[in-house]
Image (cartoon, rainbow, N blue to C red; front, side, top):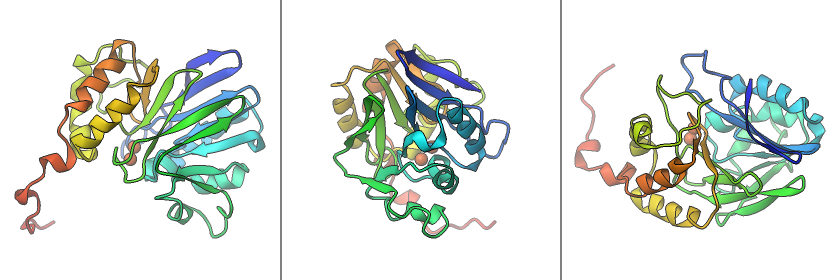
Length: 258
Ligand SMILES: [Fe+2]
Ligand SMILES: [Fe+2]
């Protein structure tokens, strides 16, 4: 089932979070459906594990041909591996970084994506969805080379992709976190390994401080709301991660055998 993150005057933001929890091998992932009256968009539709429930959820709100956009923060399997099925079941284009524009057709049967991949330029884009827009904000190297987050100015939700992700048994994606301190343990290891450098975290923090953000909702784990929004931005801008932490010892020829 889904969680309603926002619902006002025909504009809804829905989160699907349990489509692959029961499959222990696969990391928990959230998918999002933005509904604006009789149309909408999906954000980070996920892999094949997530497809059926998200598709059913969408058809409860509008017919498949009225889906106006499939938005992908980057090209990882948990983001967009179901693309072939979405290309078959709808007529919507997929928006993804220009960096990945010619790579995503590999998820699909030949010809399936012809004329339907819209490359988002590095500087980002305001994408019309129904009466409103979703803003593709640059989030490059957080964590993929070409990476966008999607900000909804109506709900004031920032869909942050892998940034802000939380993992572990103690994390409940249905329960927004409003104070960060107890939540850091569920985020720290992931951010130190998957985010590329402190420099890009600081650039990102400077950009998002200009936005009015009610909620930061990552693609894994729990949404952050209330004081946790500001606390997350402050925490992450001071975090050392990725290449900040690497040295000679990390690039040695291995001696371990399988
Ligand atoms: Fe990713
Ligand atoms: Fe992810």
